Amino acid sequence: MVDTTSHTFTGPHGPKPRKAFSRRNIFLYGTLLVVTLYYALPLYIMIVTSLKGMPEIRMGNIFAPPLEVTFEPWVKAWSQACTGLTCDGLSTGFWNSVRITIPSVILSIIIASVNGYALANWKFKGANVFFTILIFGAFIPYQVMLYPIVIMLREIGLYGSLTGLVIVHTVFGMPILTLLFRNYFSSLPEELFKAARVDGAGFWGIYFRIMVPMSLPIFTVAMILQVTGIWNDFLFGVVYTGPESYPMTVSLNNIVNSSQGVKEYNVNMAATILTGLVPLTIYFVSGKLFVRGIAAGAVKG
Amino acid sequence: MASTRPNQLFRNKSAKIAAIPMIVTALFVFVGGTAWTIVYSFTGSGLLPRLKWVGLDQYERLWDTRKWMISIENLAIYGFSMLILVFVIGFILAALLDQKIRFENTIRTVILYPYALSFVVTGLVWQWILNPEFGVQNIVRGWGWETFTFDPLYNAEIAIFGILIAGLWQGSGLVMVLMLAGLRGIDQDVWKAARVDGIPSWKTYLFIVIPMMRPVFITTLVLVVTGIVKIYDLIVAQTGGGPGIATEVPAKYVYDMMFQANNLGQAFAASTMMLVTVALVVIPWAFLEFGGSKNRG
Image (cartoon, rainbow over all chains, first blue to last red; front, top):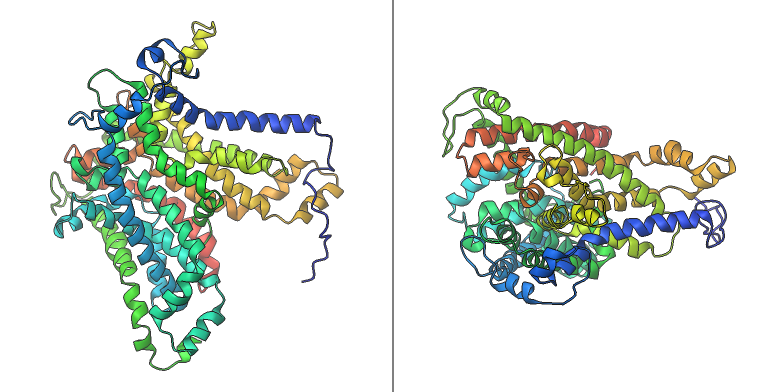
């Protein structure tokens, strides 16, 4: 179809442009400013609280910037905070989370990308049936499958271990990642695939030499999606690991909500930021790719 | 086409091998696991699962338990409030951002960052902000309003709304982003035509744009609803189900029964009820979305 609309004019949606300080602009930017401040406020409060000493917190106001900046709460949160049983802070949880997240992300992306590739380019009979089940599986509440997986992991001797949790993350990451990769590979020009076939490349040859090099953006999107998702997981961590291998989110909850001792709000907030730091860094660095990852959940298959 | 080539069975062997993890996951975990849980919800399993049939006893007991009734009530209150507010807020924010404004990226980044955080982090931050001794209540009192009371997390009557505040803070960015994508997908000619006809913009949104965005609304609805039913971490971190059992939710009921009360039968019955809830939303959606076009990839 020929584009008949004017392609030089890309004006705003509303009526024609107005003065900078029109009532509309004051209202619009005013509202957005208030909203933005509201969303930013909790992060600000976390940071401010974590930099204050306890006496200052007790007398002061949570919005006030610290009079005397102290990093002691951060040190304490990292290495000394108590969870009720032990007092070695969040560091153990952090390293557990690292040891869970890295293999889970790699494994789930390898499996899902090969899977998506098979579904996009090498359709076999019945493939779509399994794919449909997989996609519907994404909607099943995890609680329904918690116990059967406990039994399966116990049967193969991995219940309570980090390896077991890695498998669980790989399994539950599969629906969304497979969808993501399948849709991406389907959108690549088919001629490439056909040309490679004519040249005698096989399943793995095409995958490694054509599909993977052409799909680096989608691999990045998948990585962002998985790192944040797995890092932020709480339920699987608490169900499938034991106290010595709890991920960071679980240790954080245990530190903050342990009923013993005096509540040290500054340490709690330092621990909270520390836990949020990895996904936040990824989010702020990745920008648009993060948005693309979450939008992938919304595109229909 | 691939099917006209010879030795197709042999050639597709690699694809079939590559699909084994998917097939195992789909069949054993998703179908098998779900079926297993449903079957065992009709048994008297306690500490360990065993096939002692008790018919619908678990379900009768479930609906006689106060904690479950409160869980359901909380989920309903939280769910409906969340659903309405998250859509209203998400859509209005998206519409505001769609006015060709400056700093769009910055504003979007700030509104969406809570979504990158763990529910545990969200829960703990809001636990701190809503703490009556130090948080919002204390500050407003400091301004001179001595009787001001705002302690949702310590008042059983309104505790669930304390959770709602945190849930909205974390979830509205997602809806905004999806709505914004929907708004950007609307043909600009629609706006021009509405303007030529002299229709005010709020009317254009309400009667023309929103109906055109139906697919986006439906997918967002499905995402939001499945997220609501799964709510667990936020509660554990923010209130632990308290005060008392005021903020219990079904997902927490399942966990408590499964791993603390050693009452597996109850846990399975409760999780089956959660499954039914999700199915009531997802199945009609699937029919709407895919019903007419079964043969499309």
